[in-house]
Length: 146
Image (cartoon, rainbow, N blue to C red):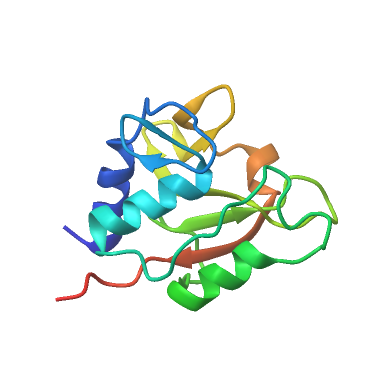
């Protein structure tokens, strides 16, 4: 199984995890960053740096792309073509900082997104035009440390 396929399989095990701000425990609770953190632990190993406490509107008042910068430090740039297993970083409103994350996937109906968001927890939803146009960047998980 390729690394990207392994990421998707691991992400699907998080489906149904309730939304909990700043949490990252499969089956217990997570937010969108917590999902990525948990997948890192599941698929790569220990987290590469501590995550400071953050508010739901973090980085917006300062206009800083903190999440993008952190992803660039620890993940690889994604291939030119989106692939299942890529980490997608979303800008929820034009001109705002990018601060929502998910894992790109695929099912029989087409492209999907595995992500956690308030009121829904971790779900796999269709990656329709509304989600697709919000993608600001994509990253690939590094290979597992051997």
